[in-house]
Amino acid sequence: MAIIVSKNGKDAVKLDPSDFQLEDHLQEYIHRNPETIPLYEINEDIRLLVLAREFPTGSGPIDALGVDQSGQIYLIETKLYRNNDKRLVVAQVLDYGASLWRHSLDFSEFISILDSKAQRAFNMPFEEKLQEFFTIDLVQTEQLLTNVQKNLNSGNFKFVVLMDKLHDRLRDLIIYMNSNSNFDIYAVELEYYRHKDFEIIIPHLYGAEVKKEIKSSKKGLMLSDDEILQAYTEVGLRKQMEDYLAVYNAVKAGSRTISGISVALAAAKTLSFIQPHDPYTTACIGISPGRIPHIEVWTIKEKESAVAKALEFLCIEPIPMAKASGKVGKIPLQSFDPMTFIKFLDALGQA
Image (tube, rainbow, N blue to C red; front, side):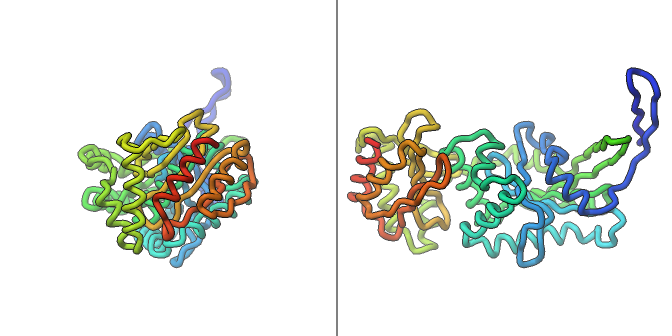
């Protein structure tokens, strides 16, 4: 396909397709311009933040790794059509996904790598970039990170293959896999044109039409209490989680009242006790089903000292706050005691 470019109806120029000269150029372009991946054809509300290039795995580096505002993780692989391994690109990106999932038990290490990448690319910490890009507050950031960890631990990834020209058999393979598996894998063919200092990209998305039909019949991902308990049984923390749920459900049902404290529930069932005020002045405690062995405490700078005093009931040393807002405490679930925790909530309600 050719494109005609003109200025004020004059000096029309016919542009023929150009080639990306290097895969590195394509990677950098996607990193700087994530809108090139037409996820709006899957869901018009999706916003993709490409966080890292060359993200390390045991099977080699992922070309690019990104997240959207719901905590979905995207593994992006770029390949030029002339490369002789184009038929292996699906196997390669799935291999990266398997390696990332297999070594995902240490979520803090995963976040540390993303933080290092974000500092280098955006000159700001990872969580601060999330808040800026998605325009979210502390509670929403906590919920997003909880969803990211849940997807990481379960190996629930979105795979995206980008090429300057899509091989017919690769297109058929992707459609076949989306029709017969639980994977979300998409192919994006990029038409590339150059005119003076301008670059023109026309993306074509394949695979989304199949997953739309499948997902329309799926139920939500809300977990039951039994499912949460089973998840924590697997990590030896069932009794502690039972005690936590007992307090949470009592506050939720109104059978136990704690002044200044209510509960909140995120999409992936993040169980949080919060001060129900302006979201930008909220302290919250959340825990998610899976492999998180502690309860996290978040607040804003103005409440840091008050929340630190509340943490004294649990003999918890506060985490120094390095920026305007963020995490100030981690309560080990291993030593969870309901009555002491309720005293902490009473103090938190007054913070």
